[in-house]
Length: 242
Image (cartoon, rainbow, N blue to C red; front, side):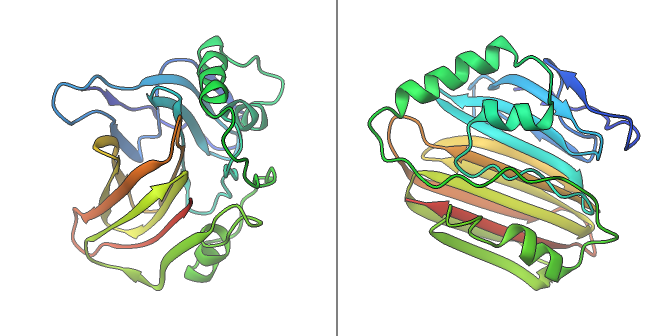
């Protein structure tokens, strides 16, 4: 079990590369809380100039979690069916890709040989807006990203104020996005029987995680969101394809 945390620096200072470390203080992470399972490898982490903290974990052989934590006003990177290496290069232009991330991406490529390809989302120019509303959440986090997702579940306008759980079956790629308007929530995700995410997210921040399946589709992906503070309100989307 490993608790990982890192403070985001002042916004606008430029991106910093971290080969060890983790996410923003707005998001406390426990990536392996099921029994004696070891914490997944943190392959790389980049904090962009706009405050988007992008991290890459190998949560299972040939399965990479592309994780982002950002202030609610920040536009995060699009990640649907994009390789982790491609996302890293967008997040840290000109920076060398860490060997650990290259090796993990090679395992993903080998595992997915012969599997059908899918539409990848386009790179997204990140930038701030004045403030995010429920309408902004739907626009940002409830689209198919140009046809990348076959199923989109969007919970916003009004935001959620209680606990939520869901599951989907025979999944190739799964993405969960949450923005906390007030209060605090805990987010957990399981792929098959493996817990791949356990994060606490604070008010005024968003968290986005994307997982591509490795050698074969996930049989089932389950998520739970638990309210852990009074007066909590949050927006949520889950997206996947088969």
